[in-house]
Structures are given as structure tokens and as C-alpha cells.
Image (cartoon, rainbow, N blue to C red; front, side):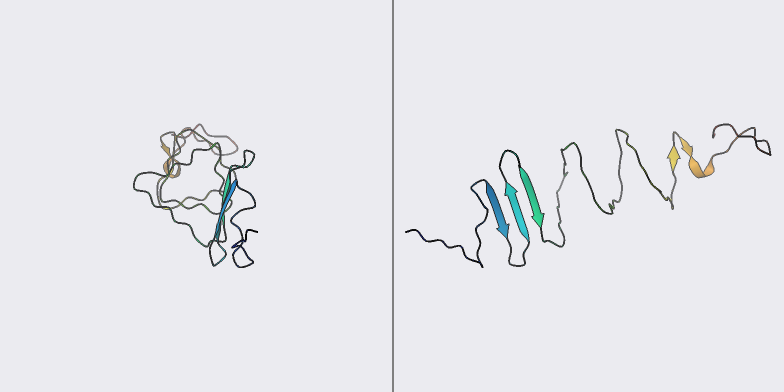
Length: 120
């Protein structure tokens, strides 16, 4: 008869040989399921995560989803995209196609119900 070191206080690391789980004393858990239909990594029960790289962090995937507030010091959007919802800008210059939005002028303005030409 072969014994086991697993118990309620020391559960097995995964439910099969294709899983790896590490559980910390505070309940934080890293779990990887290598099954062909899963290939999933999850980290749960943590309060913060910190990644520090000297050169770059690359997320090479068709989609990256942030479910809450995303804060960044700078950004560069290189291949287009869309935005939906209200966007508030303050403390700097906002340009579109070379025109500074808060400084642009319209020529040929007539009072009344007329519309103006494009921004300049």
C-alpha cells in the first residue's frame, strides 16, 4: 500500500497529471492546465501583481481585455481602433489630423442657422 502526503491542509497540486497548481498559505493560487482544450493559466487570490522588465513586456494575442480602469503614463496607438463612451481631456494639447482641437477656427462664418466650413 502506498501512502499519500496529501491532506485537507496539504491538497494535491492538480486534479490530473496535466495540471500544475501552487497554493500559498494565504490562499493565493497559480494554476496551469496543459490539456489540449484548455492551455490556460490562471492566478487568483492575489492583491497585486508586479511585472518588471528591463526592455519590454509583450502580450502576443488577438485580444487583451482589461475589465476595469486602465491607467498608463503614455501610449502610442499605431494601427487604428475605435473608442466608445465619454472621453474627457485636460492639461495638454489634443490634435486630430494636425489641427489642435481647442484652438481651431472656422472661416466664412455667418450668423443664424448656417453651418460653418471645416476646421482650420
